[in-house]
Image 1: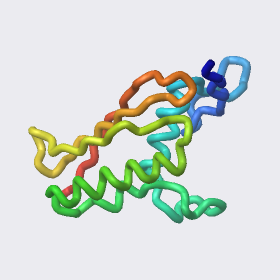
Image 2: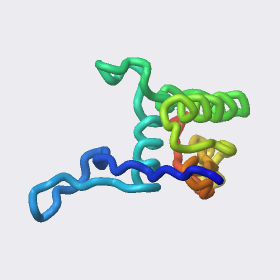
Image 3: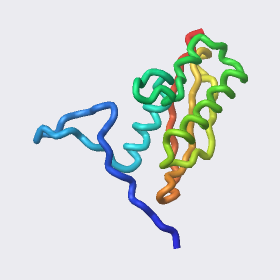
Length: 131
């Protein structure tokens, strides 16, 4: 028998909307996880005062050459940071490819499973290296 724990309800981040009753909106399930994954990936280490080691710092790759080495480094940073900071998912793979329409841009596709029910999901984002 597999124990399945529910995903906790957490405040939406970045702070989204305020409900009609004046309360803050809350994210649930996969939305909460996706918001947190983006927050991890786009936060620079040192940016949070109380947690200076938090974040992947993907923006540090801006102005780096769009080559295999850079794409492999990006994939490694994504895997490592999500393993440390988003324990609600198991990352199955990270693909970093060059955009066909813009050679300065990479597409990052993260394939993962929700740990509480093993549901597969993916998250994609673009990063313009600006070179």
